[in-house]
Length: 265
Ligand code: NAP
Ligand code: GCO
Image (cartoon, rainbow, N blue to C red; front, side):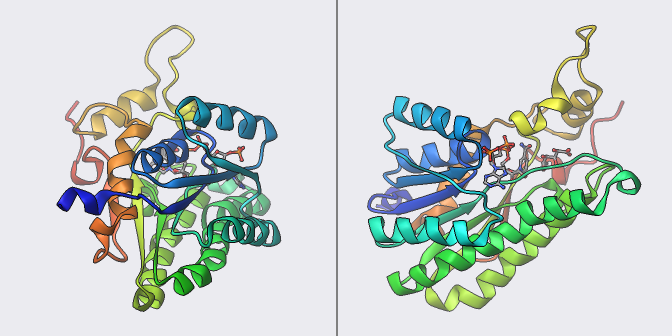
């Protein structure tokens, strides 16, 4: 049955930054498809709240306080999961930050921090899980890319550099480890309503729409912001046997932004 190829029964999944937003939604979808879920974040309050949210949805998730940029902490988290689970079958490199600063005003430390979280961390966590995937006979890695893997805009130089690099890291992992039945693909969300984008869409003090909200809706054929739930189906596809011959692909889930010049004024 073709639908069975979308099942994650018996699979284990680690979603970095899965305490809320896109990561939480992807993990929720994986759990519904039968996977065991682990996630990590940095903030103890976020961890507590997330565990409650998962529990309320009937998901017995494992939560770790772990900064994805700290190599030893990442190795310990993966090693604990491999001891408890046997291996990590699915990794979603989702944890990410953005700093919206004009490049000439951005200091090198801020630039490096964004690259560290949004790009280097995907290298670190993938490096930690791939040996177990090889031993297990295969695995799935999904890197959460962005419109900024393809496009630039003012104030997001570090973020675009990181997400462009993440697109190419995705293709390289696919190239280097495809022979071990490891598929590494990217998912590229458009503009999604999460805490990360709240500053771009909250109404103005006078109640009028945020200018960026109007801008993005005019750039999106669907004329709406995406929701984290819009990503659940595409992520499940990339995490399941249904995509076993898809490798090095970036699946854009953007409502059509990359295809569209934008609505005429
Ligand atoms: P978000 O709401 O800001 O959530 C980010 C998550 O990552 C939180 O769980 C956060 O928890 C965690 N995190 C941040 N830094 C971390 C670190 N160093 N170590 C471990 N966990 C960390 O972001 P989002 O909108 O859901 O975005 C998730 C991913 O999708 C990001 O990679 C983002 O770049 C990408 N994306 C977002 C959009 C969008 O429109 N929202 C579109 C395209 C791509 P703690 O703060 O507790 O660590
Ligand atoms: C921004 C937004 C975007 C989204 C996303 C788009 O400031 O332009 O934060 O970068 O987060 O990456 O795909």
